[in-house]
Image (cartoon, rainbow, N blue to C red; front, side, top):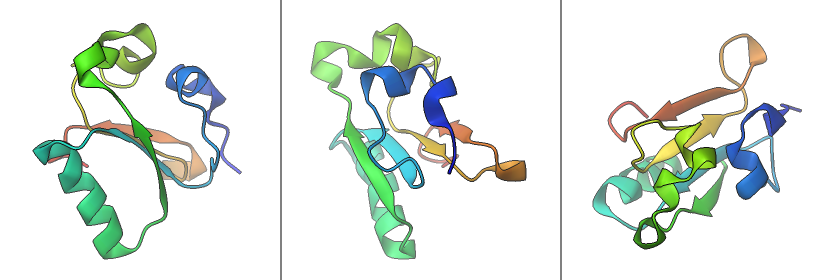
Length: 93
């Protein structure tokens, strides 16, 4: 099982299922793009609500994942070489 504890964001939003993609997003057009894609291709994921109205994208834990302070962002626990990989920006994901 992947160790996601190296990502500071998991201290604020812990992974209940660390073997799944971790999606950090909100119900916005760009945020929904990623969840729709994950549903369509059938990848299991765990969604974490990032409340942009409370500036949660600007707290240090979130900025450690996406320094742009925008949603969505993901952590893929099974990245290259079996190591977790962080991605952000809906087009890149």
